[in-house]
Structures are given as C-alpha cells and as structure tokens.
Amino acid sequence: MLSTTTAQQCPYLPGDPEDEGRPTLSFERTTPYVDYVGVDTLLRLQNPRTDEPAESAFIIATQVMELVFVLVRERWEEARDRLEADDVPGALAWLRRAAAAQDVLNDSWKLISDMSPTEFNRFRDAFGQASGFQSYGYRKLEFVLGNKSAAMVRPHKAMDRVAEELTGLLERPSLYDAALRLLYRRGLPVPADRVERDWTAGYEASPEVERAWALVYADDRPGNELYLLAEALVDVAERMTRWRHLHYTAVKRAMGGKTGSGGSNGLTWLARIVEQDVFPELWSLRSSL
Ligand code: HEM
Ligand SMILES: N[C@@H](CC(=O)c1ccccc1NC=O)C(=O)O
Image (cartoon, rainbow, N blue to C red; front, side):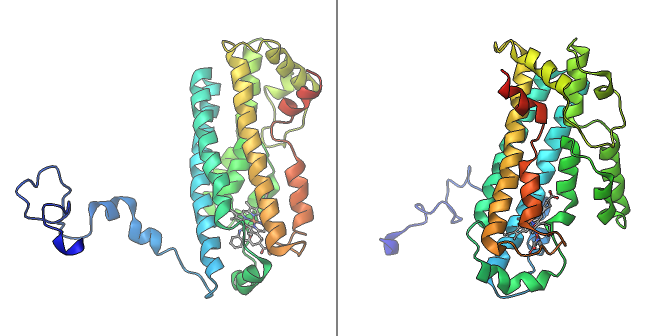
C-alpha cells in the first residue's frame, strides 16, 4: 500500500544511509544530459502550424527520418571508403550497421502510416510548397548510393554549404562504383569505363557488370568475401526500395493521386522511382543464375 512506503523502499529519496550506488540528484544549472544531447534545442523544433494532432506526428516522423538519413549516409560512406582501401571485412561491418539503421528508418513510417486524407488535409495548406523532394539529406543518400543527377543540386543552390556537399558527393565514386572498382582490382572483368569515368553521370546498367557479378556468385562459400559483399549490397538495396515503397503507400493513403506540394504529379512520379532497382545488375543476374 502507498501509505506504508518508507524512504528505504524508494530508490530516489535522499537521506538514506546507504546512498552510494544511487544516481546524482542535484545539479547547479541544467543537467549534463540536457546540455550534451541538446534536449531543449531539439524540443524547440516542434512547431506545428495547426491544432491537428496528426501534424505533430508528421513533423516528428519527418525529423526522425532526417536524423536517421545522416546515420545511414555516414555508414555507407564508411563502407565506400573501406572498399576503396581494399578492406572488404571493414566494408561488410559498415554495411551491416547501415542496414540496421535502414531498418529503423523503415520502421519510422509506422508513426504516420495510418494518417487519413481528412487528417492530412487539416494541415496540408499550412506547409505550402514544402516537400520531401527538397530534402538534401535524402538527396545525399541517393548520391552516395549512385543515383546521381546534377539537376537535383539545383533546389539547394542558395545554401552554399549544402550545394558544396552535394556537389562533392556528385563528383566522387559512389558506394556501388567503389564496389565495381574493387572487383576490377581483384581481377574480375569489370569494363574500364566503370573503373574510371565522369562520376557525375547517372549509372547505367551494363551486361558486362552483370557477368562480373555472376562470376562472383559462382562461388557462394562463406569464405568468398566478394560474394558476402554482393549479398550485403543486396541487403542495402532491398531496404532502400522498401523505404520508397512504404513512402509510396503512405502517400497513396494520405492524399491519393493529387498533385504533390513539390510540383510533381505525385503517385505517378513516385511509382517510377519505386520501380528503379538499386544496384541493378545485382538483381538482373538472378534471372540467369
Ligand atoms: C503521408 C505523408 C507524406 C506524403 C503525403 C508525401 C508526399 C510526397 C509526394 C507527393 C512527393 C513527390 C514530390 C512532390 O511533388 O511533392 C514526395 C516526395 C518525397 N518525400 Fe514525401 N510524403 C510524405 C511523407 C514523407 C516523409 C515522412 C518523408 C521523410 C523525410 C518524405 C520524404 C520524401 C522525399 C525524400 C521525397 C523525394 C523522393 C525522391 O526524390 O525520390 N516524405 N512526398
Ligand atoms: N509532398 C507532400 C508534402 C511533403 O512531402 C512534406 C511537406 C512538409 C514537410 C515534409 C514533407 N515530407 C514529405 O515528403 C504533399 O504533397 O503534401
């Protein structure tokens, strides 16, 4: 019963002779936790423009995804750098961690996946022309994966730092380029125009690259690190496509086939993106194995 609760039974009450081993309770200013994590700053970012509760969920889901985009990109960049350094086990470890972060990213759709058109309409006017299409965090992810397009830097031109970072990623080999360059160094018949090229150009699938991967798949023993690499890339690719598909379904559910706030024709445009395979040859080779 509550009334009989004594100081000894409560782990937080001070004055207990056996205080050691318990958490610190007094601080001069804020707590070190609030300082380190930036909790006050973080929570100041909650500024819904309407009273519709679904708007709060929409903003938080978007913010959560923007944060996890950063983690996924950092991990893919680590994996890319490990591949460029011929360290396949290192790359595999980073790809595994990236896939775990992608799982969290995909799970965060649950925060808004049941939003109805009526709820969405109650705050849709409030954000004007804002659209996820303008997310530079997402664009960086696409560039690191290898889906390059100079036109996609344009919306960010007025933000010098962002435009510079995007251009930097546009101009260097992607994660997939790094994997193909490694296959080449390991003696697989990757065509020369995939080993050195204008990295700003979009990736085009190639039958020769498919054949090179097929040679890797000929030895599926766990000791073949190139086979493990291929399958780790497929894990990443599948999760990316799943994100796009979850997005597509959320859009279909919340706004049907209406025009997007970013100016696209919405679902029709997003459907084309869902259909594009990530690391295309790693999927096409499965028809001939
Ligand atoms: C139910 C909620 C959502 C709806 C109705 C929606 C709607 C749309 C639409 C219609 C587009 C096409 C571009 C346009 O014309 O606006 C789009 C693009 C996009 N959205 Fe969403 N979205 C939702 C949630 C989210 C969330 C939570 C994120 C996470 C950041 C997000 C990120 C993106 C991105 C990155 C694009 C560009 C995709 C690409 O370029 O391939 N969206 N969204
Ligand atoms: N394109 C969406 C809105 C949208 O995308 C959006 C708007 C504001 C803040 C985040 C967004 N996220 C996702 O795409 C629409 O057409 O309503």
